[in-house]
Image (tube, rainbow over all chains, first blue to last red):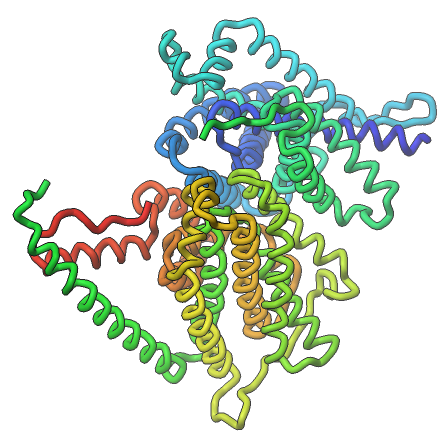
Length: 293
Length: 346
């Protein structure tokens, strides 16, 4: 039973990270109808920025918040410069542009920082916390905490500020929003900025666990896809819940199903994606998209 | 823009232009084929290997383009079928000592089946979601290959020996593989040409452009879509099988997500929905990384990324589309002033 609890807690910790990245995907999907394949690489790049700042001697939290600011600006610029020209293009075009972005960010990171695996510090103490006979890693608990604080802030932003309301309006009904004076284009840009910021948090929380490396996010991204699919691409809250579910499922399946073990974990995500898409494409909490033809 | 008086020259241009254009095309193709047949006697080992690889890529691109370019089903995971083809050949030769010639059709048939089966759930996935599922597939492939290490040899992979020429032909193994790939490419090229230019091709394009209208016109969309998936996978599988023979080695990590993205780059550069584009795309993905590697290890992918985005902005139909556009412009210029009739398919 101890093993079970331990696996659940560490599943929740990684699940929070999947959920954050999934949330970033869903935010962009809702705003611009784009599944951002470069989301993982954007997070990876932000994490590298944080790493260089810390190497330059900045304390952790200063680097943390500076990275968030940079990630936000970076996301905004990417939307304005790269995504905007193809905003109304066919799906295939947008997918290809996003893949191009993924490849560019990945190779630039490799160019600047090389492909050598680097350790990344955790802001939390390293002595394990013991509750009963179960041992928790402080970084796991810390990551869950950071995720929750971020989600709370985002919820408040979208729920209680007029800017948040404008962004939701722009995503939901661009034409009417434009008529009431919302600058829809900029709202979409802000959405990308915020998504990049959320991704940066996920990157910095996961880097101490899986180490820093240009390809570090490819596995995380597929889990984030699975989470967003499970929760529903139209539901931000669903994506987060999906993330926690996927994290726990991943850990429990790896522990208790000997066939899967640790080396088929990505396949679990693949199977999950396909099953959800085939059985209930709108996900657990999403709404089915109805189209007039 | 043109006035009604241009009617007669148009008719004449329409009568003349296709003949001359087709004639030039035929001459060009024959010249290209002649050059291709002479190449192996002038190039040395590694260069020849690279050109063989170009043909192998061209086959895979032809397959992917059928699915993504013509049928509009986005696949970011065709590396998976390439891997299945390669491993089918490698396992059959290594475990069961099957003559290599038989492994290529088997690889194609197996991929046809797997692709058809994968195409059935894919029917329920539109655009973005299919891209997502296939992207996940591409990411998962190396892990799956490593897991079944009893068959695949795990991370070590399988080493093969390169087959020599049959019938006592006086060719080196490199030259023989070159001609084998060229021959298979030609056969598959003609097949694809016939498939895509006729009734089937029209149905595929109709499904891409407007599935509901296509269904209303009596096209069995489900059957066509999953069949296209199967045929596309078969092409890519044959390419994978050839690559296993050419490289004489298969290992899980060569079939990672970047292989799938490379194939995507190939069809985008060569031209979506363009048969001849497969060759341009294959040349691009084979030779550009090679030269870019001298700048930095990361440079090829930086270039690929910039090209992916750049092509989408300025040349959405790739090199194939640009060539088509240019030749039509030329034909029009030669035929005098015609109205802007020739347009790329939307």
